[in-house]
Amino acid sequence: MTRKLLLGAALAAVTTAASAQDGEPIKIGVLHSLSGTMAISETTLKDTVLMMVEQQNEKGGVLGRPLEAVVVDPASDWPLFAEKARELLTVSEVDVIFGGWTSVSRKSVLPVIEELNGLMFYPVQYEGEESSKNVIYTGAAPNQQAIPAVDYMRDELGVEKWALLGTDYVYPRTTNNILDAYLKDNGTAEEDIFVNYTPFGHSDWSKIVADVVALGADGKKVGVVSTINGDANVGFYKELAAAGVSADDIPVMAFSVGEEELSGLDTANLVGHLAAWNYFQTAESPENEEFVATWKEFIGDDARVTNDPMEATMIGFNAWVAAVEEAGTTDVDPVLDAIVGVTVPNLTGGTAEVLPNHHLTKPVLIGEIREDGQFDIVSQTDPVPGDAWTDFLPESAVLDADWPGKQCGMYNTQTETCVQVQSNY
Image 1 (tube, rainbow, N blue to C red):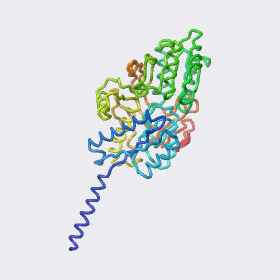
Image 2 (cartoon, rainbow, N blue to C red; image 1 turned 135 degrees about the vertical axis):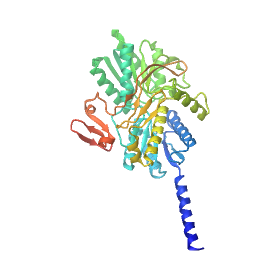
Image 3 (cartoon, rainbow, N blue to C red; image 1 turned 30 degrees about the horizontal axis):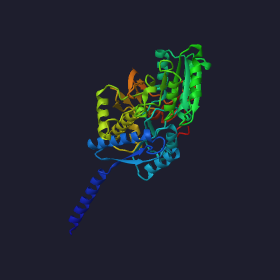
Image 4 (cartoon, one colour; image 1 turned 90 degrees about the vertical axis):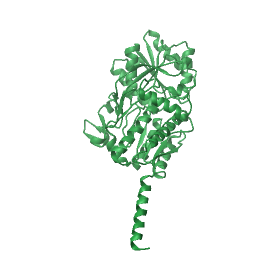
């Protein structure tokens, strides 16, 4: 073979290799529990990511490359979330992770993704008090769920005394600390606030319900703010009904009960009680109609429902795609530079914007539980910017998060210093 032919062959080989490289899949990590106590909620989000990947591939992928989902099972085991995140980033070499549900699972992952400079989209409402460079928080912060829900109960339902009931872990405790401070700032007396925590799976609610009922002995209207998680809700609502307490008597506003949790349950004891989210399946918009239909077709079951964390997953996925296409790469730092200010459609007829604190703008919806396990939307706000650090705890009120401007998620506005860059909270 002549030298000219050899050079031509070599150039052809290089060109072919470059073309193959261009077509290599972009790997999407899916970090959701597929077994254990959280599987009932998280499996749906795994399926949502798979649906989004399939849809995006039908559009031609991202940057001309196909997407490939890499699914792992952290099995509702909080330390295993950290191990599986490390595996996704170092062994599977994923470009982004969609995952987590409980706050303890997210906090387990934080040190790993910050050490390895990964990127995770976290799709569930949470207690705030956090802003990591390496996380985009697509669920609600307290000012996008808890605070507006309490305002609704006070202003629309006339609630004057409060029972803050939660499962005993970080999200309910921090949320209730914020609500306790907020209520007192707004004139509620300490004796008009009852706070109680129970373990996961708690079943004996008779004493707690009796204490809640006793709050109203003076004739003041009592309301329950519930951060009770999981199957403990079934026993709680059942005990309320057994005590002869209706939603008119003592309304319950839940932050962790949605369509997925109600699906397949006997809702007789729940009708008329309330939930606060940023999306309900009953939202009326062309975007939601299309999303619900696509989901039912993808999952092959008309009985399957949609819910708020699914919308948050969808918003996060589409924001990531937009940022990658703007950055021209899946590398984390350019994507993070590009993602702040990105706006994508939500499912309630508006748009979600990614903010400098890595939270979103989200409308606040209040829904009333129906017999069919769906919600009548009784209140909806304009989009509210997510606040990483609450204004109602003194130590947090002075903090700000601004990644593009200050490269800091915990910036003290009084001392004008960055308290910390890597998370240890």
